[in-house]
Image (cartoon, rainbow, N blue to C red):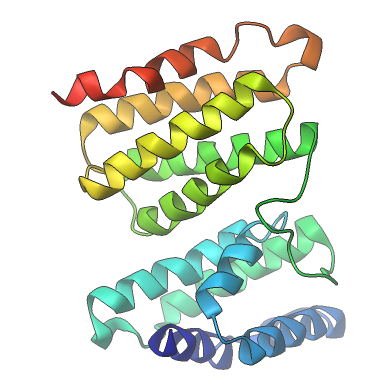
Length: 226
């Protein structure tokens, strides 16, 4: 974890804080910087931050830079493009969220429709990342896998609970097989994301059968890779 912590600390140290528009925004940034500086596991902190409404893009950029640095330590240094991207996603986070005063919920917390919509949005972002082939997909996959494993502990919906188990199995399969660029994975993820999004935005009494297509694809996904 030492290398990860070092890279994250460097990202915070090189962040163009002077370009933030208000003292309140700078105070929020300083709190985040202090929180990460005091953490012994920056990667875990990033996963928590990713789950805070509005901050997923900011955390994802940091995860992408970390992933890049792991592949090539010479790319650990922050470029002007990195700083611009971090600044824009942080501004977006502040605009969407307001000022976060508490740590993000753990995977086992959170219930109800808002949680289901949040998961559907995370799945949609992952689908877009897979289709576009951008870097950072590995970090998004890991976050989504952790979310899927936590679903059973925070929902009473039998279809959603079953989906969490099946989706976690699918994500583990493509991660172990390094299949993120496989066109079959791209198609499956896209179709699953569409079904889950429709299910999540529908009222509970109108959801019957909406998850079945996604569940069917996940039950039989291995047949596409035989």
